[in-house]
Image (tube, rainbow, N blue to C red; front, side, top):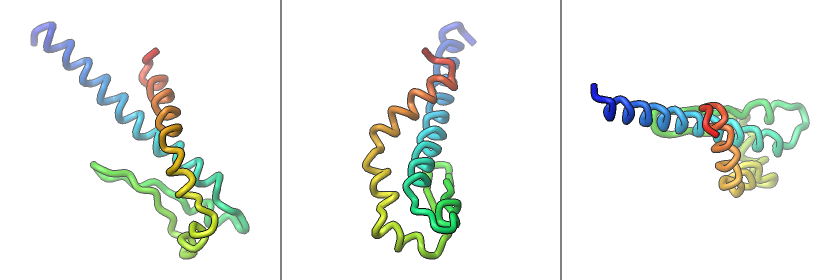
Length: 102
């Protein structure tokens, strides 16, 4: 492997790692904000939020049977989704920190 190939491989690895860190951080920040906005009576609804990932997608899920009804008046997901640009900035900053990028 030439020096150019090795350098390209290192750049690819760093970029891929930063992207993976970004996705993880975005999901964690989004989930935290949704949980913080979730009304609490017993804590079941708030504690039922979870992230699910496939190779291509990330989903946020709540197994509480009444989650959709609470969303209809509390808008936990809708409000958090409206903050996606800010969440992206937070996630990018954290991902760079995890990857050791200044």
